[in-house]
Length: 118
Image (cartoon, rainbow, N blue to C red; front, side):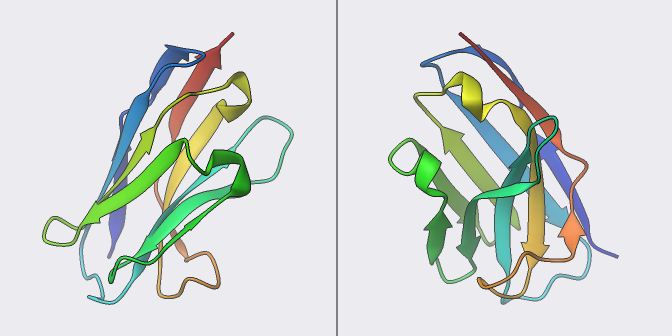
């Protein structure tokens, strides 16, 4: 059984930075896609960024140039470096694991809260 454990959320002022981490454990296919989604109250969960095991990335337009996704395949860990944070970045950030860049995966972490104050 695969588990995803996120860490690194918190409260930060607008313009600040945070780094999220997500470690995957269990039986994981070597070819996979790990990503971050976020959900603000009253909204649908949306893609923030995703990265394949061979390094291809995809970002939401709203975070391009501010956020960077990376991964360590040896550690089965994905990172999200968030900079120039805005209040609209506030939400619960969920790690996701799947097999393709085209669809969100079936495995989710428990989520970590990110709050950006103005």
